[in-house]
Image (cartoon, rainbow, N blue to C red; front, side, top):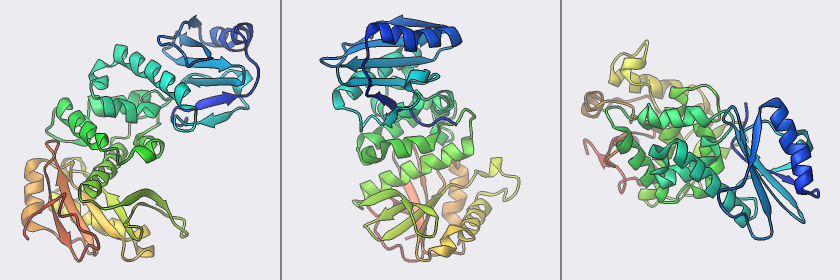
Length: 333
């Protein structure tokens, strides 16, 4: 499986003739390709081309006297096989800025419904334009409303756009965007669960709690967040009852999800706060959970549901070691 879109950095000497010979000709032979001028002026001191393949793939290439940068979701020509990879943050800013303008403009011609939400388009650009994840990630927002039931595409995208506009996940852009998906196949359960981590990041930010996502531990496990430098957090999202073969009520789904989580990494890390995201539940399903507030056999736990209008309700089981009151309206308190 290919990863998120990254630059390939070549330290060799490049010219128009070499670009034509070692990049364009192999691409044209294998896929059918056209060499075109970039839509935006390349960085000062660079020359640049864009390649459009007959199958819809693309690539950008720019070079100066010190080397070159390649970026594309197509096969990599052999001349660039043994090159280092750099993220948008690692490459020089003028190169990154030019490439992202090219990619966003290209998306605007193919998916204007997506580029209307500038933070969503920018943040997920490494997967929206990746080799394997380009179709599935766009489908997740277009057809599945980011995992929210009973919501329009516009409502879901506005919510995610507002979430990303905070900048709270900017330092972790590649890591978090990649978790949404670089897979050629749509795994709606996994993608919706990943969106739960985005929502929890927003809750932590709104509550004024410092956090770091995706914490690798000596046990070999990776938990979703470290909060205030010391408290571990693991996020899980139960499937709604309509998509489960067992636990056919919302209350049972919450109980079963909490119990299954405690048999895995939480047993190795006692004291970790379990956060159960019920944002995939319909209004009536969440109403049943909020009324009963089922125990899940583990403490501390937060059970919550977010809606695209920004409202968040939840309840606590046990003593949570950090305060989320600024982000969640507690039911039953």
